[in-house]
Length: 73
Image (cartoon, rainbow, N blue to C red; front, side, top):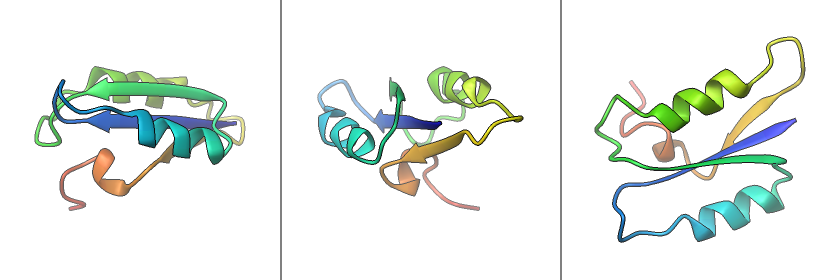
């Protein structure tokens, strides 16, 4: 199953475009969060990761890599 994760940095921003893209990509379950990319504590991201089943073909899908982390290293 495709599981989508959308994040914005501030309350003034909206996840609408990300959610639309994730739905169009076939995500059946969506998790959304308002949290700065600089923060390491992202409870909704951890919830999405915990939702993934290791014995299935679950995949976490994001709109862009910077929605998961500010920097890749």
